[in-house]
Length: 491
Image (cartoon, rainbow, N blue to C red; front, side, top):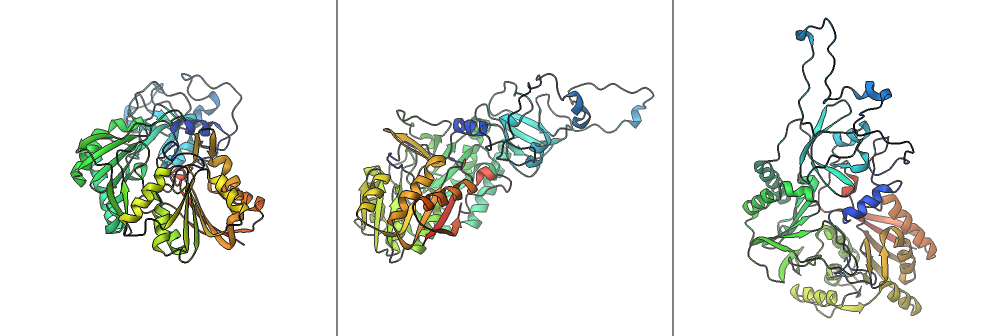
């Protein structure tokens, strides 16, 4: 469920676990309240811009702060007269000259396990370093915080790979992390769903800048950052050993595309060329996916818990499925014997794939009404005809701009909820799904409430969900909890 409001699902920005291009992350980081580390040590909120001239990269800590900052590890310290060499303290762990020193608020969240150092949180500009360069990260006193990989573009400057004081990112380390990730999935994911799940989830599995989905006998590797160049060859070999796939495809998500551009298809890294239709299974339902597709293979694995929630709500209900994409939510509703199911999507090919998925799952391919076009226009048409539904499922893309029709999750969620309210029956529900990492929980809830108020409905939040078990998130990594699934009751 990820195509646009008036836009083909093929053309909107696709997502990593955060689903936002690094270029837009940079812009988000430059706005007040987004993507920085505050003086309180919290990630995601920015201090007001400082007006004074920044210190020279060569000047080091200010005169007033040098006592607190401690000696510069790269600066020779004068020896006091009368000092015995035997009385000098043991030296700190030695680090490379390219070490990056961060402020204490940043050090605090890194110790807590946050895996990113934002570019504007660094005390000085990074020296020109190749993406994927392994660098030590130090606290203000020069104590090691761990090691990270340089990211040469976007808001994130360093992606942590270890909290140890000594570390090398070797092929054995990559293999060990892939095997640990596999063992965790085998324990956490239902056996029938292991052939359609995420087997490596970036930072949570110690391999930042990538994600790997298992789709039948193929693996689809997403590359979100050039820092992954440091280990991607070792990763492919480790994946081949762990899963013996028929093939591994690479899909690069390094930047967003404009309305006039199209993403290239996925690139075969190893193994055999895949057919355009591969059948995978989720909770007993069958879906056709295409691992060679330029945007999405056709099934968003991170929405599994949302689909389960929809199936529990759907029996004997009138269900409206907005931004329906390939109909994964619709299949759940049909299997639950909903009274009716109506899909709305901008792309006719999405409806065609939905019918194929229904057939593959042994369900009636004509069980869903299919409407092709702009969701806002169809909602207005339904309002004029007094058509109502008991459950509305809405899962728009975070941003899209095609053929003059623009949707932005940051700006338009309240407008979307206002348009939905008239078509929801009294006592009905809206299953609202947002995958925009830049929209916080608080902002999302505010947008839902504002939209319901403008639509003349009293709303209560009666349920929520998020990422499934195969998409683990580090506790301090708030950006990693990008998926928000909220069940709203309308009186």
